[in-house]
Amino acid sequence: MMGMMGKMKEIQSRMKSAQDSLATLSATGESGAGLVQATVNGQKKLIALVIDPDLMKSADDREMLQDLVVAATNKAMENVEPIIKAHLQQATEGLLPNIPGLDLGSMMG
Image (tube, rainbow, N blue to C red; front, side, top):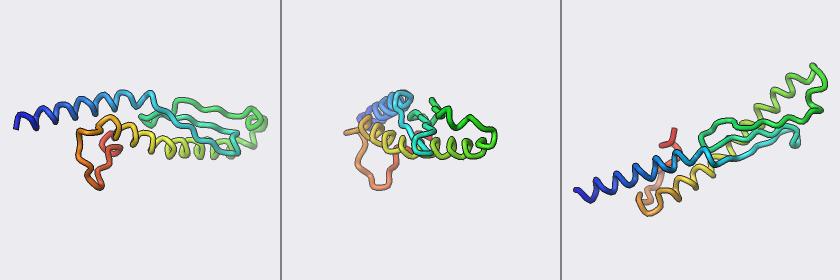
């Protein structure tokens, strides 16, 4: 029983450390053939947005620009998912049994 409690504390410690380090991970998504680029971190927060200046020349392009920003951000979110999953698996390697269906990414919120 004590060994199991020690194992749980180690798992909690490693998971906390892995969660804290998610901010250092990032992924970028783009839309409009690279005219808009969005970068998100492993905590799924938008950390950078690059918009080609040519997209801001006309007020008529506002709706298209909004769509491109949304598309680039969504792509970045998709791209960061496997990075988060791999990071969490590596952080808990050897601690948790390989349980089919156990998604560590969903445990992180």
